[in-house]
Amino acid sequence: MKKDLIFGLSLFVIFWFYQWLSFLGLHFSFDPFFPFLLGGMFWRLHLLLYLFLVLICGLVVDAFSSLVPGVTVIAYFVSLFIFYQFAKKLALKGFFPALISLIFTIVLCEILRLWFLPLVFELSLPVYSFYFVGKFCLFTLFWGFLCWSFCQVSFMKDVFQISIKEN
Amino acid sequence: MVLIYAGLKGPSRLSLGERIVLKGAGPVSKSAALGGLGLRKFWQKYLFLVGVEEENEKLRQKVSYLEAELARAKEAFYENQRLRKLLRVARDLHGQTPVVAHVVGKPLGSWQGLILIDRGLDDNILPEMPVLAYTPYGPAGVVGQVVAVERRYAKVLLLTDPSFAVDALVQRSRERGLLRGQGKELCLLDYVSAEADVRENDLIVTSGLDGIFPKGLLLGRVVKIYPGRTRGLFRPIEVKPAVDFQKLEEVLVLLRVRLK
Image (cartoon, rainbow over all chains, first blue to last red; front, side, top):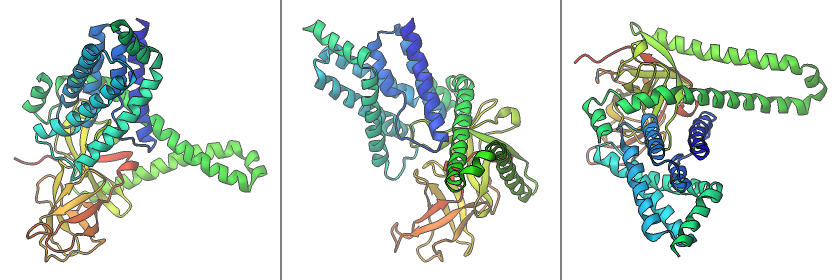
């Protein structure tokens, strides 16, 4: 219950701070929610609550940034499912598999969200769309590493716990 | 899929999920906006006071209370000035009814140029309505267009978004083209003949032919003209928007709908 509350509150604070910094004149090209949602997968939250929070985060991003509804929701769920497969099937044995799965999932999510799904729904892309998507992937990865560090106790520990259990 | 279907069914109407989320996240974003803007203004004032402090330490201590009061008064003055400018813009728009709205949300991790304003259906705002703001060049500048509305909030597609396009004129030579967003605080004036008379720093205004934006609204200034026939018969021209989107705090929504 406490973990659920902390996780939900953290997402709320992330949203508030992202907007606050934007209005402060500091705009950051990264996905504020996804890396934290990835980290949250290892917090062993109540499944329904976790899925509900993922849905809310996707809806918030769509409501604030997308012309087409649902793009972020789909991207988040697909990417989280793939990350779950990494965690389950590969058991993220060691630091590098965990890191590579993090990089792969973030890049996949951002490509889906910012490039592939908008193309499917016939939205116009900026001229240098690859540059934009690349920039978002890079900065989201930085944010991902930060989340990783912040969630070290519950996230990294749990990653290694899984590998220990598997071994 | 339900979310997408609901959105595609009526693109100008927000989906149920988004409407619910906006009701909850709108006030949160508004509080972040007020907090961010407040701190930015405080920071600017603080830096200003540090400069004074270095020059005039003793005087600053004596009048610190008065300065704080003055800062507050200045804040009210600046707000008043901004609103007066908006009023001037409103007066220029003969016969148009404008509604002043505050920007309460900025894009969350996306290249799309969308902002959220704190006026919606309750204030008679509808999709496709033009959104304007004051510009350093003087007259009303185009910010974008309302794309979706909720009771108290509306989503505005900015001029710089790649999905945005408006019929435009070069003010000096009356050459016509289509202004499209480029996604990085730049726009492209397309379909302008390679032989057209266009120079750097020419002002670009709306032509009024699209039936959405009134004629003569400022769009931006020519910053770069690509040499030769870069795109067949046409010569693309880079335009910098007249409105500074980073500093956008208040906007005017014209209560004007396209006749179909």
